[in-house]
Amino acid sequence: MKFKLALMENGTEATEFILLGLTDDPHLQVPLLLVFLFIYLITLVGNGGMMAIIRADPHLHTPMYFFLSNLSFVDLGYSSAVAPKMVAALHSGSKVITYNGCAAQFFFFAGFATVECYLLASMAYDRHAAVCRPLHYSTTMTAGVCALLTAGSYVCGFLNASIHTANTFRLSFCGSHEVNHFFCDIPPLLTLSCSDTRISSLAVFCVVGFNVFFTLLVILISYFFIYIAIQRMRSAEGRKKAFSTCASHLTAVTIFYGTIIFMYLQPSSGESMDTDKIASVFYSVVIPMLNPLIYSLRNKEVKNALWKIRNQLYPPSLSRQRERASVSRKGAEGERILSRLYAQHRA
Image 1 (cartoon, rainbow, N blue to C red):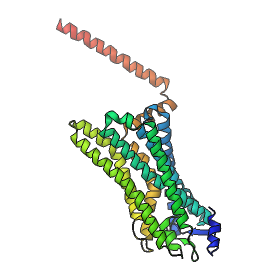
Image 2: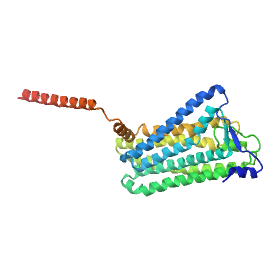
Image 3: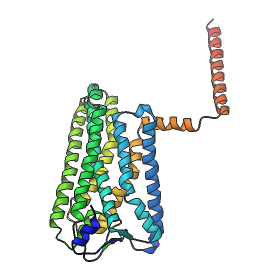
Image 4: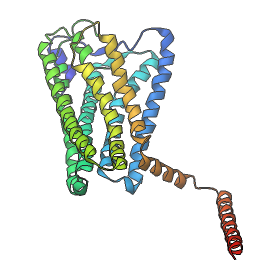
């Protein structure tokens, strides 16, 4: 769709927007540049590393890590839709974004963010199958089921993005073209439009509401049955292990859905825009950085895979291997001496 031509047909000649960013204080531009550049680099390394580790280790070729690998890709996608442009604007001081560039940024951000909702729901279903029906897990979460859930997540995500993009960019922007935000998002664009936005706002509320509450309902139902299954376990160690497999996912779900609901399912107003910016920073930039940490810090399998890759890339030196062999020989010799002394003492 050629948004620029559609815009001209609506009677306005706007070809670009001005993203006002987080603040216009010149003293904060360099600190913000360094902070967001650091966060984005950590996001690239963390999510890219997670995908590489899962691909490299055959032990991680399971449904859980298949979904986690896709989650890392999605985090990279919607963070990359926002962060590079924001960092470039802070570096150059140019806050201009073309009309088509704004539409593209909005489309990819909305698409990947919605895909994440459905992936998180798929991961909850996977955890439900693992905890509640462990004996049938391999037949429940087959490769075909995993591929279908993942493909469905992408289809739903980018279908949702297409609806929102067409719905938002059919509006007229005949007044100021200054977007009070650091990227092209629905609330500030609707505030900027001089068209009647009641239908667009209702469409946003209904579509976002359906995506959020449907996927959240799947997650809540899954964890309801997981909780019941954990309570029925007789072994304390089993309960602890089952809970630990779900703790990371629950943390990610709470953070992600909390900010999404705060941003899109409340009435938008000019006064709340600064608060919306803070929430947007959190879910568009910070959460993609945190997810690899959340899923790997308490995950022994990921740590072991990372350690194996590290040893393959940087194998222990020959001298260190000799030292270990020497220590091992000395230990064995000491044990033999102690055994002889013990035998003599008994004799």
